Structures are given as C-alpha cells and as structure tokens.
Length: 428
Image (tube, rainbow, N blue to C red; front, side, top):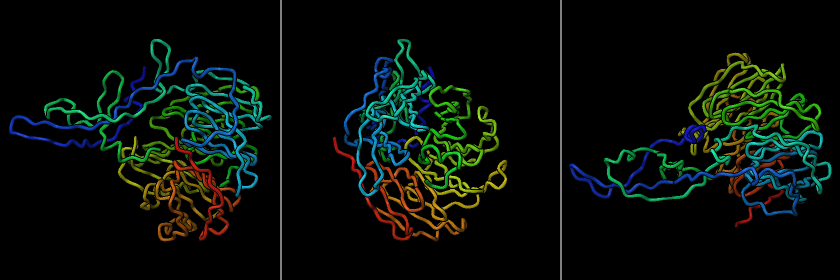
C-alpha cells in the first residue's frame, strides 16, 4: 500500500514550548494534530440504489458546477446539492443526491459524472427526482491504498493532542511523525491553515462549467480527470456507454486541470504542466512552468496563464502571489511578472477583468488589460466572506463558493460589483 506520507506533504517548522532546560536535560511540551486514518468498505459506498433526497442544509461546501441554469454544490465527500438558478437573485434548492466520497463532478447530455472515493459514477439526471445509475467504474482512482482486509484508506480526520517529551526524543524537532498508520502534524503548522462562464473553449459550451479548482473537465467528447499523480481519460462520445481509454502518471502533488484550445493545463504544487490533447485519448506532454512548492490553480486566456500560489496546509510554501505566465511559445512558458496577494485560491476572467478568490479576504477584481500593471489596477474588493472558487458567466454574473456558503455577484460593472444572493452554511 502506498505510504500515506507520500500523499500528505506535511509542511515544515516545529514549534515546541520548552518548559525547562538544563545543560544535560530538558523537557518539552509538543502540540500535535493527530491525522487519524479513515477507512471505508465497499458496502459503505458501493450501492446501485442512488439516494435522491429532499433539500438538505449546506454544511461543508466543496466545489461548484453550472449546467443549463442548474447550480450544483458539492457537500464535501457526502453528495451534491442541486439548485434551480434561473433567477440568480433567488436560487431554489431542488434536492440533494447522496454520493459517498464525492468531491468532483461534471455533466454532459443530462448525465452526471461524479467520483465516489475510488470509483467513477455516471448518473442519468434527466429526471432529477429519479436519477438512474448508468454505470459505475470501480477502482479508477488510487487514493491512499487498500488494506489486506479490503478496506480503502480514503482520508484523515484531525484530532488535537498534547504530549510531554524530552529534547533527546528522536521525534522532537520534527514537523511530523508516523505511528500505527496515524500521521502526527505539528500543531503550529496545522493551525496556521484555513480549513477549508468565463471565456470557455467552444467545445465546452454544450456541457457544464466548473471552477478553476476542478479535477474534472470535459473537452472533445472526453472526460479528463486527475488525482494526486495521474491523468485519466474517458470516452464520453456516447455518455450512456462510457469507457476508460487511458491512464497515465504525470508527476506528483497534482491538484487541478483546465482545458483551453486543444491543450490541458494541469496545476500541481510544483508547477503548471501542459499537455496536447489533439490525440484525445493520448494526451502528450509538452512543457512545464515550475515554481516554488505551493497550491496552484490555473486559468488560461489566450497566450497568458494566470496562476495563483498560496501558503498553508499541504502546500509547504510561504508565499501568496499571482504569477502571470506567457504561453506564446507553448513549449517554453515563462514568468512575465508576479504580484503579491493575501491568500489566493480559485480565479476566473471575464473580458479584461480578472477575479481572484482571496480566502478569508474575500474577492478581488483587477483590470488585466495590461498584464504588467495588474497589481496597480484593483477595481473592486468584496470583503466579509470566504472565497474559495469562482465561475464567471456572460460578463455579468459571478458564482462564488467558500467555507461560509455560496454567493452570487452582479459583475456587470466590475468597479461596483454587487452581491445579489447568498446560500449560507448551516451550523451543525
């Protein structure tokens, strides 16, 4: 089984409080977050009985997706909320589809594609009140491995602990340690981290639109998906009879995927990788833009890539910035300029306006007509909420998701953006 430490890159710098220190002896109090493993069995998530439920409160929102006036909001690792967004000022919740282990989603021709831990599901949602499972592709993704008893290691839950030790303890001074498949992360590192149509390729306009944090994307009758280390290709020309056509390793710490023209731009913690998809089932590596280790969403417009880098969590970096990358020569992308940011996450672009989610600092709008002057041309800054990812539609509407809920903004005047609706997170 692949070591969990290869999946969770755990930061650096240990903060220990010394309670006493002598020449030959000292004691220390170390605060850790114990990352206890979560296991699930096949019976817990493999069922042909889809659970369409009445509207449920939004509790732990993940990613967003837009399709034919429907808004989909992921309830992290639990399912998907469906809303009728025909009137963005008053979205109406239709219902909730329970999908254990779900994080990402995409839709083509009324068929929802959604991950369920290691599996990929294809679900006919023509009648939302009666969704039908078209097919389940088992064990598409690797995740963290499988035990000898058949249980899947699917994640970790944090538990804070405090421990007394001596300075000569082999683990003292380390940012992490591993015991009995539990990962222990230095509390100072963990606590510093927050927990939790744009211009679209013409080939995508018949399908839905995802945000810049997505691991799924549809292009040219193919679904492309990434996990932490691989790129997967699925033929969905007949979405009722899909097939997997390829799986290829593409590095490590892979986070996002974004299509533009006949290319795929893959964001990782170490850089942006570019693949040519002219052979739809055999994407070919072209080049990379390397940067310091950091979380890395990507948005492409013309010959320019906009890449946000942020610190915290598994990202290891202590820099928050926007990198503007020139793609005129697709085989040799290069950095044009970097701009300091507060804590940038997802991003989108509408005409010359660049929208950047700044985490707890809200949403910023920049005039990006001159890529050398973006930092001097802040048009608007909406504060007071958490912004994780964004989708812009028709130059007048922005869909934004964050840890405290879903927001919609009128962006027809980018200097005076206005909130028009909000779906709040309901406390437990």
